[in-house]
Length: 186
Image (cartoon, rainbow, N blue to C red):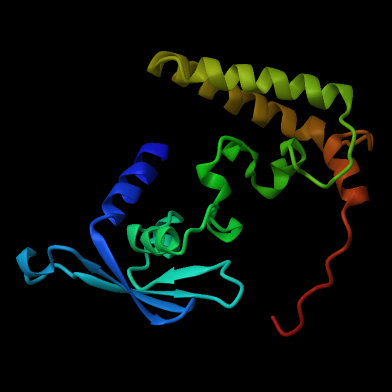
């Protein structure tokens, strides 16, 4: 992603910027607009919100990919901005992208606001499960073997897991999660 971002910065230098509304609206026009194909768009409008924290280009690249377009980057350059606004820095492009986890795994997220302690058995099983995933990914034969074994464990363990002792991590998670009122008019 870093390389793609660098390419977008370079691509932005091919655009001239015209101010339409000071610090609010700009038009970026390709330097070689006359030489480009007729179907190729050469001008894009970039708008900026009041506190200059959100740049919006009509090309829609940020909304589509989560990465700023060359047009917005060019306007930022013209405005001598030293930092990209926080709104435009998506966590999925950062090193700690693995911290964006689904709800049932949020306890593993580094910046999780939940202050929950792990049970010893939960932590032990989690480490073993990660090792199984690593082994499973080694080859097709390994995948088939581990997948069949996991299916068997899930099937045989379901009845045993129905009898809960209240010490499971999942049980503790429910204790610390605020209740969500049911939605009206389903």
